Amino acid sequence: MTDGRADVSRRGFLRTAAGATAASAAAGTATAQEETGTGDGGGGGGGPPDFGGFLDGVGNFDGSVTDATGQDSATVEVGVDNGGQPYGFGPAAIHVDNGATVQFEWTGEGGGHNVVSDGEGPLDSGSAVSSTGVNYEHTFEEDGIYPYVCVPHESLGMKGAVVVGTDYPTQSSGGDSGGSSGPPEVPNSAKTLGVATSFVMVATLGLAYFFIRYGGDYETPE
Image (cartoon, rainbow, N blue to C red):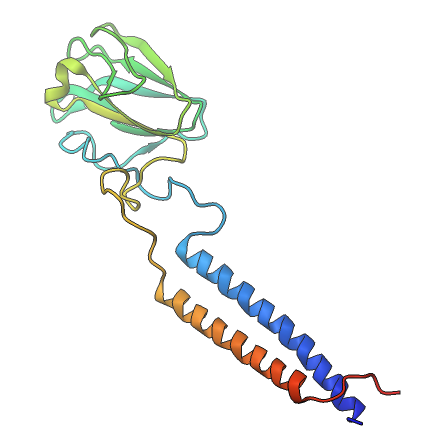
C-alpha cells in the first residue's frame, strides 16, 4: 500500500495545480485584453476628434477643441475674427454632451451669415441674416461630428464643427477616412505572456497526468 502522506501530498498538488492553471489563464486573458483595448469600456472618443481635414485652412482654428461638456447649453459666436476678417465661428470647434443645445449668436460683424450643415446634417438656420443676438439654436441628440458652414462666406473659410458625446471618429482610430484598418495589432508583451501562460498550463497538466498515471493509490489512510 502506498504511503498515505504521499497520497495526500499528491492530491494537494493536483488541487494546487488546477488552481494555478486557472489563475494563469485568467491573468493572461485579462492582460491581453488590457493591452489590446478589447476589454469592457471600449468605444469611440478616445482621442482628438478627426475632422477629416474639414477645418484645414480655417484661420481661427488652431487644432484645439473647446470643451463645453457638462453644460446644458453652449454658445458659438457667428461673425468673429478669422484671419483678419469677421468671417469666422467662435469657437471653430466645440465639444458638447449628447442632449446639449448649441446657441449661435450673431455679432453683427461681416454682414449676413447663416449656419448650414456641410453635406447631410441637421443644421439649417435658413437665409443669411445680419441682426445681432441668438438667431439660431439646435439640440444635438446623436453622438458624432457635425461640420457646418456659412454659405455666403464658405470660400473665405467660415466653417465650424460641433463634436457631440463620446462616440465620434478620432485621429487615433482614423475615423471614416482611412478605410478598413483590419483587426487591432496584439502587442509583443501580450504575445509573450500568452506563450508563457500556455507553457505553464501544458507543464502543469503533464505533471498532473504523471501523478494520476503512476502515482498509485489515492485512498485516505486509516
